Image 1: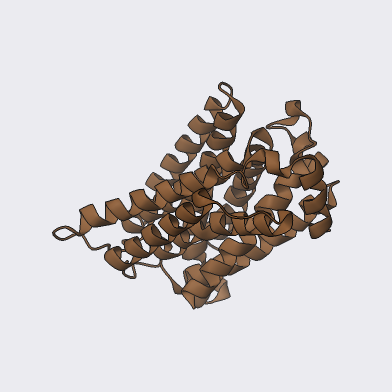
Image 2: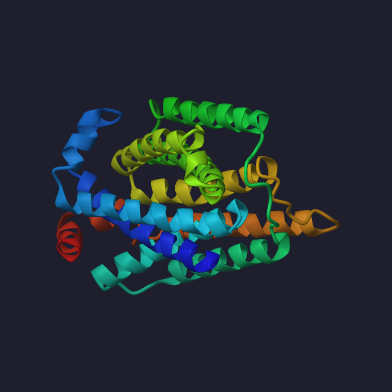
Length: 295
């Protein structure tokens, strides 16, 4: 059940990312990090479709986190990039080349290898106050530093930095969601007297805003690659440290798990360089075709 909901969340996330990237293409360059970016987006029907899909993705992800570990659910969301390529290939009637095939196979191999080797075990449902304080501080500082770096560099770097910042906040948001699902099992009276549900809204909105800036700042390849690489890595760290989700650490397991994660990230980076994922494939004639398909 965990795998079904997590994979479904990845598929919906991919569709949302493509449609929202399309809706932000015509936004003025100077609207970055301004509310004007969102006011422009909400006037585009295709962007609104993506927004609704993101809400659905959150429900699917929260359900997966309710029954599974963060160290399992979040890495499975890496499949998002495979679905992006599949969507664009289907809409544009393009053949898949070696880059797409090798990248997809590498992601699947790395993901399967990590899950089989690490075998994450169930941790504690509610972290301690000290653990929450530490992970909150780290997440906020890392995201803020990444956003500051977007003031310099080429468009691909800005998209990657915004995407990485959003990924960090979404990993933290997943931790909050996981904790909230535990509170729900103890009764709704326990939910709204705790801070986690409210923090979900704040971090979700902040991550969402940064994601829109990532999609607007540069090629979708850069933003999606940073999202699918940083999010699972940050989530694994949070799961193992904050939620005490134990990963196999004896003998050669640590080295093998690290290799699997490197393979996973390499596949994501390779697939992100596919012409199907590059910004050029969502412009002009292609943009009109994709807009018609999602209308």
